[in-house]
Image (tube, rainbow, N blue to C red; front, side, top):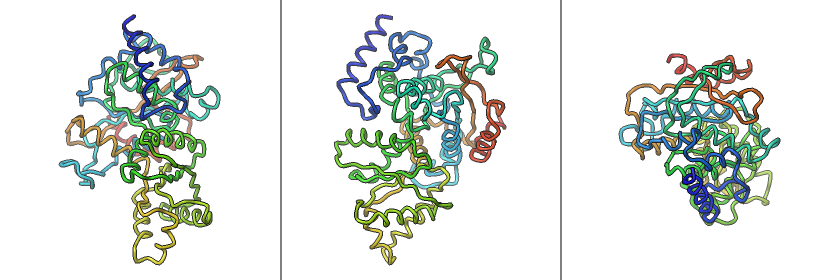
Length: 393
């Protein structure tokens, strides 16, 4: 117990002295209550999933945690991803899904999403607590049979990679998660969707300064701005900006044309965009990229005019592709693939509150019984492969 406290205090002091590349929106704030309780006793049952994490165990799941909508899209993207050659790892699909043989585990947080309401009502501390609890659940084996029986316990597979699907998790929880992992001494691969997009953007263009975000959810723009600010600080970049790009369109191709029209209408008051962060899962990034190639055709009459709207190294980064690439890179780099020649499988879960407790909730096997009719329709429409793979198990 005393050893755990000493380690926790050392980690917190170290975190305060060193700037993390995944710094939270408010690094000077106190630690959230749940995080503090874990750090105060590293021998507790709650801390054990971190202590027991085996970074070399490939026989684990890829967990996707967050709101129902974003988890649905990300899980489906992983089920379908074919961005690499599975033999040599080079970019370019080979007809075999990138995560063949893997188990994708969506964890729909029905207990607390939408997270914008959590932040609005209770602030960043509670949002961080919710994110950390989801992380612990993903690494744990504990599952309850249903939301009525809290006496009996079931078991699930642990996660080897945890994907935080919601931007609120990226903005408010990553620094606390880094502190926990530092105390545990465990290199748990945690992928934040926003950070994965920004990492890819800077990889394509290290000198990118002017970012645009397209998202149908206006509440996430400040979250992108905060995450971009900390990433820019970690790279010692100045003059980095992020703006919204709200373009009414029905198709992926029309979207990009609308985006350029809006920037053209802004006149000389804007600088050429370096990166477009695509936070709209209804748009197919391949269709958008194909349209971009046509627009940037050096023999096109519009190319010269478009050069004033977008920079010469303009790139589009989609949330689904960025997360898939990041996850694939981690599994290949750490030799965590199962190497099974089979279609990806899924194991789905939902979170449920225990009584009226504000932060006491747990994980249950997925059932449409826990969803509203419109939520069931949404999942079936946007995650058909994920649901089919789950039903087959």
